[in-house]
Every structure is written in structure tokens, then in C-alpha cells.
Image 1 (tube, rainbow, N blue to C red):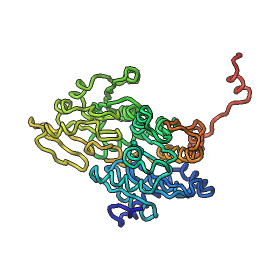
Image 2: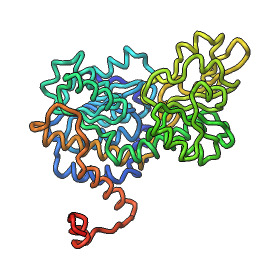
Image 3: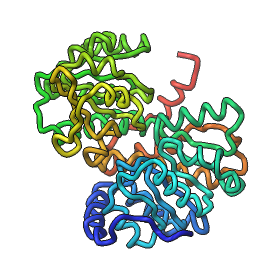
Image 4: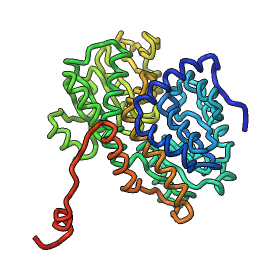
Length: 416
């Protein structure tokens, strides 16, 4: 392995404090850690982790190490990497390759350095590692048992590869598990996006016109949080069922061409490119704020915006202002990178506790079953989903009912 790549080892103490704080609030990972330390399910296994590299991700990487794995860690977006967390993982003895804010070529070098471990299990967030393994690092494919994918974007990329018959190992779609999208995508992104907008701008949300572009689980969560804080929410959708759902939830629904003139705050949540175009920026109000809650910084046409602006300036940390010829300013948060991590601390620890428990147990499932799994995108087994939910309820002190034998027989019978 290459030497670790990081910005500053002196940041390790602060990174340790952050990791220790989130671990106190991640009871599922602590339960799994105890089991993994006793049984060492990953002994002799090499695990490469590429997820937004902040404190909760560090807790996941350390969980695999506790289970006996040799672990290599990198980020899934250079603008979400926290350099103090990288330093803390370096001090803990893990292989780690990540520096905040590096350009694309350096980011890819870090991904490749992490893959040099020769992974058996890949924990991916956005599909970059899986893509590299299929396109540039094919020599490593024979050793890969499978991958677990964290995001909608990555699942879509992997399914597209599968449809072309070019997926070379099984991929577990962790993103599609109930305990992921119902909680992480909705409550996690909803709260953390609101946090990012508020702390970065220090502006009022109440009374503002907020435009949420995309009404999947991420968009639903963002819209609900903005509405709860008193914003007037407009939803942009291309799917008629989702658009109808937004109407039934009490939101305004209209085309983006119309909403662009109306909104004060714009938040993209589609996973698609250029859902805010240069023409949309052209007609926005003076002082409008736009940000992206999707994985990749492609949802806004920032190249087109730069061409139309006569001046660009960082008006406040992570608030990039673009001045138009008529004197109007349009403000972009985090330069279009995933706003809840680029401009805040990402999802709450209690949410990532569930998502990363799913990751750890799905990786264990791959390890135990890779010899019989075909090379397709797999759903998380229902028993894993249910176990995570039960453990989470247990950690919260919540007790639920169970069916009686008579009730179970009734439900299983066609006779009434």
C-alpha cells in the first residue's frame, strides 16, 4: 500500500473528539462492534470504504476494523471530506487517502490509492469505486466478492451497468432498504439540508418561497422541514404520481420555468443534471439562494451561470455570489456540491447509525453468500432490514406488540 494521503496530522485530536461524539449517539454500531470484536467475521478480509468522509463514516470504517478487516478509506466527494477525520483515521492505523477540496484528478488518484488494497468488499457511495473497478482497475475484479451502495445515484449507475450485462459482481442496494430511504433520505437529508442552508446563509427561512426540485424521498424530507419552519414550498416534478402526491401534501406544483421567477431558495434533489439551467438563473430574484442536495454537483448549470455573470465572489464562507450585468446577485451554496456535507455536518448520527448498520450487515451478507449470488443488483434481505429496525427501537426504549399465533394463522389463511 502507498503511504497515507492527508492534509495535516496535527488535526487528529479534533477528529477523535468528533468520532467519539458520534459513536456515543450510534448505539447500533456499538452493538455490532461488540459482536464483531468477539466473532471477527471480517478476519483476513480487505474492505475499501468510499463514503462522504466525516465522523459517522469513520465510525463505520472502524467497525469493519474491529471485525478483523484490513480497511482502506477514501471520500466520495472531495468537498465533503473533513481533514480532521482523515487525520484521526490515520492515527488509528487505517489506510486513508483523502484531502478536502482537491480537484477531480487528485480525487481519482485517492480513489485508486484506496483500491490498491485489493478489496474483497467495497462500500461505495455514488458508484465511483465500482465504476473504476470495471473501467480502469479490472485486474482487481477477481478478488471482489461484491459491493454495497449507499445512494440512489450509485444504485442507478449499477443497474444501468447490469442492464448492459457488464456488472462483474453482486451489488447490494443499501439505498433501497426500508431503514435507509424511509429515514436517511427523508429525515436525515431533510434536517441536514435545512441545517446547511440556515447556518451558511444566516438568513430567515420562515416566510420565504422555497423551491424543491424533485419529490423523491430526499425532496419529501426537505419540503417537510422547510414547510415546518414556515416556508412557502413549491415542488418541481416530472413524475405525475409524485407531483400529485406533492399537491395532496399541500405544496404548490409548477414548471421550473415559472418557479425560477418566484423562489427565494432553490434546492435540487433529483440526481439528474441541469435541472436548474442558466436561463433559470437569469430570471431569478436578486439575492436568490440555490443549493444542491444530490450526490454529484451536476444538478445546476454552473458553467452557464459563470458565463453570464460579470463577477464572482465568495460573499461569506461557502456562499458564492454571481453578479449579473443588471446588478442582480444569485448565490450558490457550497459551489453546487452536496450541501448538507459541504456546508454542514451531514446527516444526524442517529440516522447514519441505521444506514451504516445496514452497510455492515449487508457486507457480512455478501461475505457469507458471494459464492452463490449472481452478478446483479440485490435488495437488502428483509431480515436485515427488520433486525436494524428492531435494534433501533430497542435502543430508543420502544416496545412493540407481536402477533398471537391465532392472528398469524388468520392472516395466513384464505378463510375468514
